[in-house]
Structures are given as structure tokens and as C-alpha cells.
Image 1: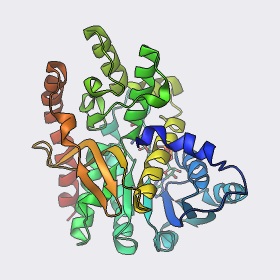
Image 2: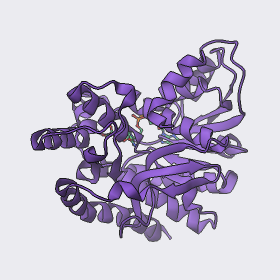
Image 3: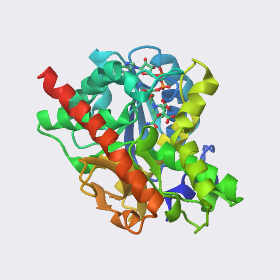
Image 4: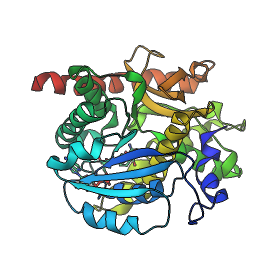
Length: 342
Ligand code: NAD
Ligand code: LMR
């Protein structure tokens, strides 16, 4: 069962807007940065999930109103709000999945790495609290630069003695969502059927869609491959420029993050057929972190889908080699941040 085909259609099928819906499972999900551009629509989408019994919303400000608003939706989960560092520990008690979209977004002309100085500290502080209060939770890092914030989170968890590499995920689902959309549009395919693995990292050339592994199998000209690859790599910048100073992708990101949450909850609930691309500690390449498709299970990552990296086209193989130095530097910058602080 491909996750792409399961998230929104499943919600529709099960009439999740309806108050007749009974919860199928009872997982607790926390969103840290819940009053932000991503946090608010993400809260709404998670509120629609039949797998969630409690939705904990945390931010440094403005979260009370968001929670009051969401709590009026007649779906099963209970919504609780938590404001500021003094309420963070309570927010995290008993939580199964923690999603972190806290931090500043890009403006035109900036790279994701330009966000490092502010977001590194935010992610560090939040993951310290996760380590202290819900060390067994799945942790989904959305805050940019993901290529560095995930290694930062790993180092924090190591320092706290609770690191489980199978449960720490950089959210790269938006790259897959974009690749699926753009390929379906270009090739006139039914959107629901399209699934394109995206590997590497989450910035510029480190985002590598494996178009040769698209499902259903599609033939592309060299020009189409070049055009689609560059569009997928620059899609974040496309949105940043269109928003002209008002931030970066929020709605498509919330959609993608909600899909990754739903996949994680299905895995926690025992569904044995859940696959997602995500940026995680990995041995698929010589890099310590790498995005690839993984199989998710009750304890986190159950398997790495190494076959995606076999039989790459020459274009893909070259692009993979070309992305490694940048990705390596971003990972090392994240690790070094923690050691500088120590
Ligand atoms: P935003 O500014 O609209 O919202 C961020 C929220 O984080 C705000 O509500 C803010 O109050 C909160 N916040 C700041 N410091 C905090 C702290 N210490 N604890 C808790 N909350 C805190 O930004 P946004 O558009 O929602 O984007 C958030 C982040 O997500 C950015 O870093 C952006 O680059 C990133 N992003 C990642 C992806 C991806 O694919 N992984 C996609 C889009 C955006
Ligand atoms: C995205 O891909 O949309 C995000 O990483 C936000 C950004 O800064 O581009």
C-alpha cells in the first residue's frame, strides 16, 4: 500500500469530517510551533485523523486561539494548548509523535542554510525537552535547514542518552508530493497513481528525485528529466518568491507533514505496509544521514529500501555524487553546532 494513495482519499472515504466517526486508535500527537504558517493547517489536518485521540499544540505565543478554534471541529481528538517553555514538559507527556515546524522561514534571496543561526538553537531546545519528557516518541523535524537540524537533533538525543536513530525523521515528504504532482502533470497521469522516490537531502541539489524509479513506469526525454529535476529542486524557492517576503510553503507543507504523521500512526498501529521517503541516519551511502524510502513499523524504521539506489541512470548517479559534498558539509555543520555549545 503506497502512502501517496492513502492519506487524503482515506480520510474522505471514512468521512472524517463527520461526527459519526469513531476513533480507530488513540495516539497523542504534539506540534511544536503550532501557531505558525505550517503549524495551523497541520493542526487542522491532524485534527481530522481518526487515529488521533489527543492533539497537543505548543508555541511561544498565540496558541490558545488556535487551539480554541480547532477544538470546535467535531472530530474525536481532544485539543490542548501549551504556551511558552514553562508548559513544554506538560505538552510532551505521553506523546507518541512530536512534529517540529518551529522556527523562521526563508525570504526571497535566502538559502535554507541562512536560517541555521536562528533555527539550530530552537530545534536544540525543543529536542532537549522531547528527550526529557517523551524519549520514545517518533520525532518529525520540519524546521530548516533539515540537512543540519536533523543531525543537531541526533546529537542532542545522544547527549541525553536516549537516541534511537529509527525514530528520528527529517520530513522530506513535500519533495515527494511535489515530484508526484509535477510528473503527473507533465505526463498526464492520474495523480493518485504516481509515486516518485526522492533521495539525498532537503535543499537545492541535495534533493534528488529518482525519476527512473517513478511508478507507474514512465519514459522521459533527457530534457524532461532535466526540467523536472530542477523544478523539484527549486520548488521551495518557487513558493518563497511567489509569497514575496511573506514566508515559504505552509499549506503544501502541512499537507505533506500530515501525510507523514498519518503514515507514522498507521505504522505505530501495526499496519505492516507503510513506506515513506525521509531524511534519517543511514548506511545506504557513506554519508551518516541520507533521505531514502524506508519501511515504517511500530518501532520506527524497519528497513531501508536500498533497491531504489540500484540501477540508477547515468544522470541520477552523477547527481548523487554531486550532492554529497554539500550534504556532508550541512550534516557536519549541524553536528559541530552541538559540540561548540558543549
Ligand atoms: P512561521 O514563522 O509561520 O511559524 C513558525 C512558528 O514557530 C511561529 O508560530 C513561532 O512562534 C514558532 N516558534 C518560534 N520559536 C519557537 C520556539 N522556540 N518554540 C516553539 N515555537 C517557536 O514559519 P513556517 O512557515 O511555519 O515555517 C516553519 C519552519 O518550517 C521554517 O524553518 C521553514 O523553513 C520550515 N519548512 C520546512 C519544510 C520542509 O519541507 N521540511 C517546508 C516548509 C517550511
Ligand atoms: C520548502 O521546500 O518549501 C521548504 O524547505 C521551505 C523553503 O525554504 O523552501
